[in-house]
Length: 174
Image 1 (cartoon, rainbow, N blue to C red):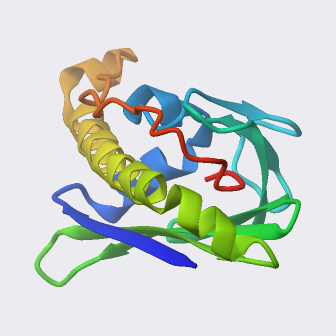
Image 2 (tube, rainbow, N blue to C red):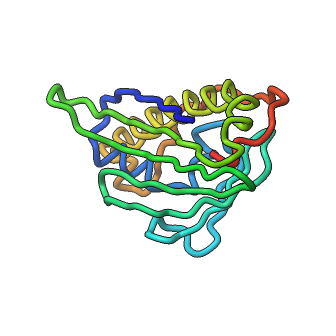
């Protein structure tokens, strides 16, 4: 099963990337993640692993398997019968905006069952994550251009929508 979400931001690609690459900050700007715990190192690097806890889902370990600094990364997670791959991209557009694209693909013997049980939650979480990333990128842009940035004070992004448990089973992580 494939799910995707795309959103545009006025933030420059480098600000969107800065927000995206700081994976341990995700719970600050999306309610779809409770914690992102680094298992190897806190930075986004090839092979780095992160344990993510999401409302209503079991903790899942994600491993960075592709990385194009400044542009994109992919991580994957394994659960019995399901392999999940999630991509994250930022792309500058000719009109000066930045396109943020995130999505997941689930394969394996049980992917159809996971999709049946979790499609609505998966779509909702992707919308929340895209909106939160947009807010974080725009906050990063404001913080880097403000006098507070010179003094080391950084603004926090706007709050994200609430994550609620719709009673569905695990997506194998997200």
